[in-house]
Structures are given as C-alpha cells and as structure tokens.
Image: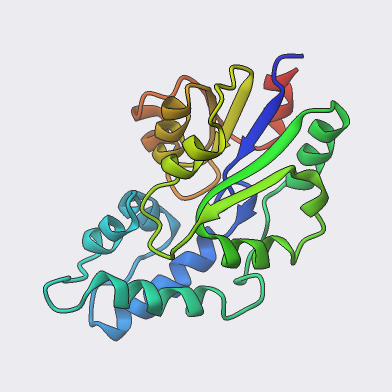
Length: 212
C-alpha cells in the first residue's frame, strides 16, 4: 500500500465553500465602503495565510479596527446557514469511501476553529470516514502546522496531505510527508503551480488515481 494515512484539508478541499466565502466577504467589504470582489478569481488572487493578510489584500485597514473584530464578524456570517451555504466538493464522498475501502486511515487537519469545524462536518454523513478531526483552538486561522506537528509526534513516512492552498503544501513540508494540491478551492491552479508543489490535480477523483 502506497500510504497508510491520508490527511485532508477541509475548507475548499472536501467542502466546496469558495462561492459562499465570496458572498460573505463582499458583504463585509460593502459595509466598509471597499471595492467588492467580482467573483471567485478575484478572491483566489487575494487569498493567503495567515487569513489576516487576505483582509489586508482586500483593503481592510487594521489601524482603524483590530483583526479580532473582523474575525468575530466573519464567523457568524459564514455559519449563518448550518452548512454555511456550502456543499461537499464534487466526488468527495466517493473518494472518501474508496480510500476507506482500502483500509487507509483518514484525518482532517484544518485551520478552522475545532467546534465550528465539527459542527460543519456533522451536517454531512461523512464523520465515520475519519479517525481524527484536528482544528484550531481559536477563530483566527493563522496556521495548522503546529497542531499537525503536535498530533503526529512520531514521524509518519507513509502519509499524504491533500489540500487546495499553498499553506497545505507548507504544512506537508513541515510534517515531512507527500502532498497533493487540488485546484478546486481557495487558490487558483496558477498559484498552486507556482508555489513549488510537485503535483496539482484538477479534481478530487484524481486523488484515487494517484494513490493507486
């Protein structure tokens, strides 16, 4: 077996939430009199970690208001619908089941706050696929590297991380494991190709092909 563990990012990878994020953030930008995102490509160009830099890229002035206030504004808006106006990404459940059938352990590693993350996952019938769900203790989405390193205290050589952002590639490098980036989420394929990750896929179904 090529891998014993597949570590999944959640937002933008298993969860298709990019369109909803554009809608929520545009509401926040409108209230501040800032230029609105024209659509997903605008959002993808601005998106980065830590999330504070996304807001800076969109013109939010943190000399006028603290980032903590902006983060606390965003979270209830994002979760104003039980699933945040989101759905599972195309083929997500099929891919999870196929990997499960191979006896490979699956884990979610997310920069979302853990209680919000669990609430969102529980809206979908997929909890049984995961041996662990790892999220942050706060809502500020700075990095998930530390929580990954803390959980995987012993080196895991045969693990694969699947995500949709440069930060997933950085996390995989920090954990010393392989990485697949999928251009279906918060950053464009061009951005993912430029970050140095060796493999960028077009859809989740291709993950199965890679694993096998």
